[in-house]
Length: 149
Picture 1 (cartoon, one colour):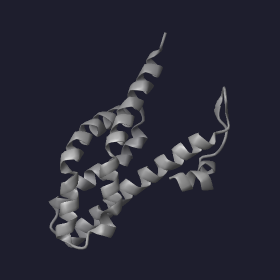
Picture 2 (cartoon, helix red, strand yellow):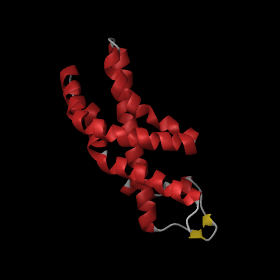
Picture 3 (cartoon, one colour):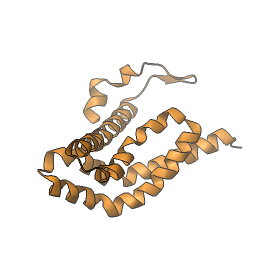
Picture 4 (spheres, one colour):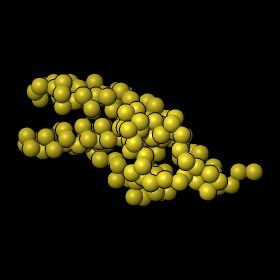
C-alpha cells in the first residue's frame, strides 16, 4: 500500500511534468526573446504570441507552484518568470521593461538548461544505491550533462 508521502510526491511530480511538457513553446520564446525582438512592437508581438498557450499553462503552474510552496517553500523563488510576464507591461519606463525582459530571458534559459542537465545525467547514469545518490551537486554539471542541457 502507498503511503501519503509517496502519493504526494507522485501528484507533485505529475503537476510539474504536465506543466513542463506544455511549456516548451513559452520557454523557447523566452529564450529567443532578446535575440529576435528589435523594438518594443516586436517584443509585444512575441509576448502576445504566448498568450493563448500561457493562460492554459498558468493553471498547471499555479497548481504545481502551490503544491511546491506547501512541500518545499524555498523552491517557490523560481516563479520569477511568471511575475515577469505579468509585470512587464505595468511600468512605463524603459528601465522597468528591460529589467523584466532580462527576467523573462533568465527565467526561461536557466530552467531549460537545468532540466536538460538533469535528463542528461539520468541518461548517462548516476552513482546510486539503496541510500540514494552518491555525488555532489556540482558533479551533475559535467560535460555530458551540460551538452544535453
